[in-house]
Length: 113
Image (cartoon, rainbow, N blue to C red; front, side):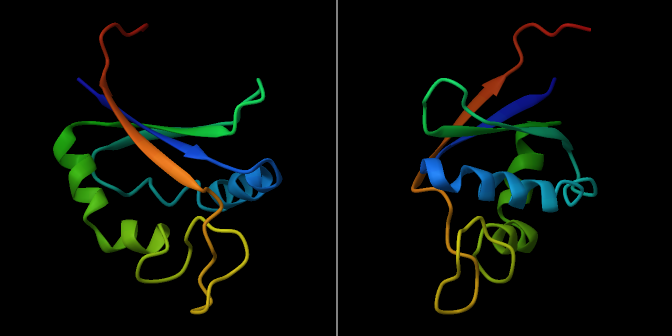
């Protein structure tokens, strides 16, 4: 059964559009990652500042393999281009958009077919 990982990212109100643009620009990049089943970026509509990145994985091992990969490091601003930032840091990489994040882990208890 699938596992769900939710990254709750605190994003200042003036940076949300940038976060959305960055995710949209890389939306197909996960298609080749073993065990990856899909993702959604959820924008808050009730005044909250936390955006949710909801991902589904075949199993915990697939998620762990991705988070330890070079692709993960590059896409999260560690070791190359593409991070999740706004502007750029001294190395030319985009500076982070979010001010903090928290990872939540779930298994699917009931699934609608």
